[in-house]
Length: 389
Image (cartoon, rainbow, N blue to C red; front, top):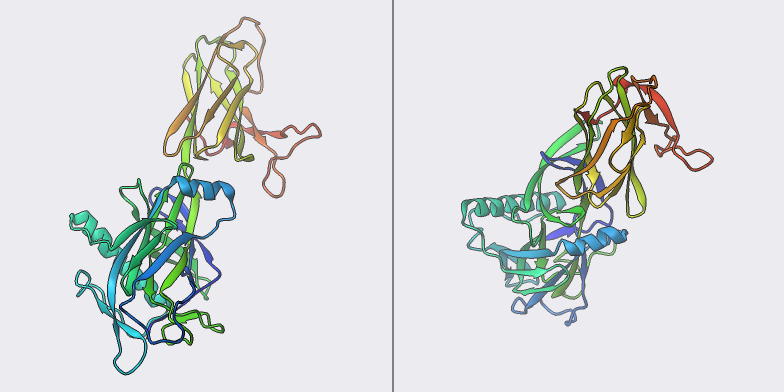
C-alpha cells in the first residue's frame, strides 16, 4: 500500500546559496487523476499509463511568460516497477536494476519519507552526471506534454533545456515549534528564464493511481474507486528575479582647486511598469579623475534612468545629463558621465553632504504635491551600501 497527501497550500521559506538568495515554496505537487476507462476493475499493470506535468499558475503574467522562455523539460526516471498482489487488488514496488541497492522504498510511506527519498534519488542523479555515468531517463518531454510508460514509480525532474548544470544545493531555513531557526540542505532543479530563475523540487509519482480520499486528501492505492491510468500533475516551483549590476561612471577632465567638486545623480529603475529601485547618489572629487559607483542586485529586465541633477557650481556636462540602460542577468551594464571645469569663479559649499530619499511607512518613495521625489540631507559617511571607488 502506497500513499501520500496532496496539499493545497505551501509554506514560504527563505533559501540561500553561494550565488542566489531564493524563497522556496515547499510541499508536494498537486495530483489530478484524469477520467478512468475502467469501472471498479482490478488493477491492470499491463496497460500503458501516462503522466502530464504542468506548472502551477503563478498569477503573474510576466512570470508565466518568462517560464515559457526557460524552455522547461521534464525528465521521467523509472525508479520501481509495479508488481501486483496474488490475493488482493493493488500493487507494490520493485526497484529497477539501475537503482537497486541504492534506493529502498519502505512499505509505509508518508510525505516526509517521500520527500526524503526524492532527495536521495536526485543526489544519485547528480553524482551520475558528475562521474560521466548518468542514469537512464525513461523519457524526456516538454512541460505540459504527455509522458507514456509502464506502470510503476517515477522520479519527475523539471529543468531548463539550456541549463547544463541544473541541480543546485540550497540551504533552507525555517522556524520550529520552539521558535528556533532550523537550517537544512535541499536539492532542487533549476530553469533559467530571461528575467527569472525557476526552482523545482524533485517529485515521485506512481501510476496507475486512485483519486484522493475526499476526507483526508490522501492518494492511496487502497482508496475506493476506479484505477486511474492517466494522471495530470502540477509541479510547484519558486521564482526569483535574475539580477545584474549597474556601474555609474563619472569622469572629471579638469579640476579647479579652490573647492572640492560635488555631483548628484538620481537612479530610477522600473520593471513591468513598477518602480524597483530609486536612489539619489553623490560623488565628491578633489582632483581630475574617474570615479565609479556600483549598484548590485538590480532585477534583470529593469529599465534604468540615471540623471545628473547637480553638476557643481563651476563645472559643466560634456556628456548627456540623462543616461538609460537595461539590466542584464548575471552581467554588468554601465552609464558614463563626463564633466569639465567652467570658469564661473563661484564658491561651492555643502560638499560633505548628500541626499537620501524620504520614504513612506510602507517603504515606498514619498512624493510632493507635484509628484516629485522628496529627499533629505544626510552626512556623507551615511551614503549607504553602494560601493564608491
